[in-house]
Length: 246
Image (cartoon, rainbow, N blue to C red; front, side):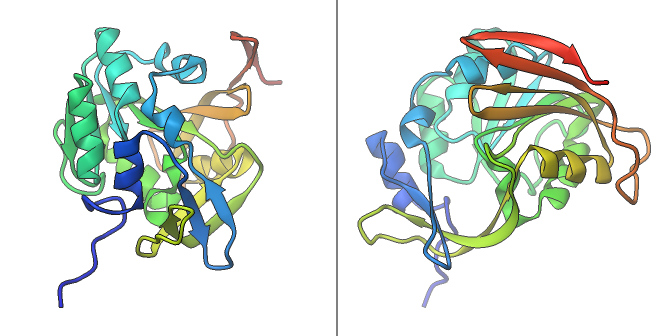
C-alpha cells in the first residue's frame, strides 16, 4: 500500500479541487471539529489593498513562501520586482505560472535557490503556521534571507497561540490527511519572533489583517530578549499611517 499523499501536495485533494474551482468551501478542521474557513476566493483573485500594504514595502528579490495560486507573485512581477513563489501544491504552482509568475513545487524546508541572498520573504495568509512550529519556520527563513533582509508576516486576526493537528475539509465530507499547523495572533507572533532572534521593524493592521515586518538580528537570542520598539502602522479606508511606538 502506498503512503497517503501529504496535505497540499496532491493533484486531487480538497485544496487542489478548491483552487481549480477558484472558490470554497474549504476549511481547516481541528480534531475537536472546530472549523477555520479558508479564503479561497480571495486567494484566487488579484492582490487586494491589504496585500498591497505589504507589497509596496518590498524591495529587491522577494520569496513568497506558500505562494498558493500566485496573486502576490503576479502582483510583484507587475511591479518589476524579481520574485519566486514556492508551494508544495502542484495545482498552486501551475496556477501561479499561468498568471505569469515564477514558482517552484517545493517545501520551504527543502533546498531553495538563492539561499542567504533574498532581500524580502513573505509569510502571508496564515503561512506562519507551515509545519506547525513557527520558531523552526522562522529559523529556516533566517537561512534564506540576506543579513539585511526583511520578513513580512501576517498574524491571525485574533489573539491566539496554538499548535494543532488539522485536516483540510471541503465542507461536504471530503477530508485530507492530518498535518501539523499553528496559529499566532499579533502578540504571540511578536514574542515568538523576538525569541527566535528577530527584531520587529514595524507592524500595522489593514482592516482585520495584522502584519509585522521583521529583520534578523546579528546574534540569535536564546530567550525572549528585548522587544524592539518597532513602528506601528494603522490603516483604514485604504489609507495607512506610520507611527513609532513609545
